[in-house]
Image (tube, rainbow, N blue to C red):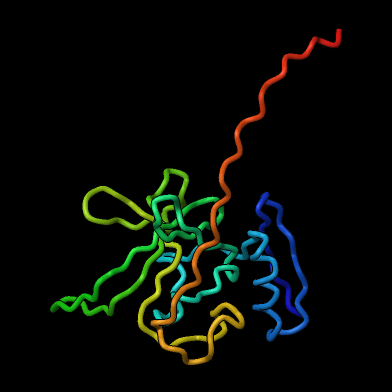
Amino acid sequence: MLHLEFMTDLGARVTVDVESADKLLDVQRHYGRLGWTSGEIPTGGYQFPLDNETDFDWTLIGARRWTNPEGEEMVIHRGHAYRRRELEAVDSRKMKLPAAVKFSRGAKSTDPEHVREKSDGEFEYVTLAIFRGGKRQERYAIPGNRAQGAPQSATRPAPAPRPSPRPAAAQVEEETPF
């Protein structure tokens, strides 16, 4: 029997028993859909293969995709919005890195030191996940969303339409009951 600890979206710690290792990701998906998370963001963010980016199952880490009103692709995780950024390949004498897609946000004073990263200048940021190189892992894909080994050019489903705001109800002045 495995034990998986989650933090609910309201901050409660819950331990869930999992019968076997092959059920682990199903349990993470189930509770992740509720916004529950298991574990902390590692230094440098979660690392996944680039070929998993288009159909990555964000519920595995308790997150969800979101498109903001300006049309930017983002991911919501523990109340923070992480922006999608495409990084070009680096090929220099000092460093060689393949192209990547990164989800990050500006660091806050309350962020632990180990997750903060420096960029050019004094700006700091926090990376939730980076997709770079590697071999596609079907276990990270949204179940049933794409055939095994499908090319990366598969299109992402269109975001759900946002509900239009309802007008505020007219205020009615009431008499004081006493």
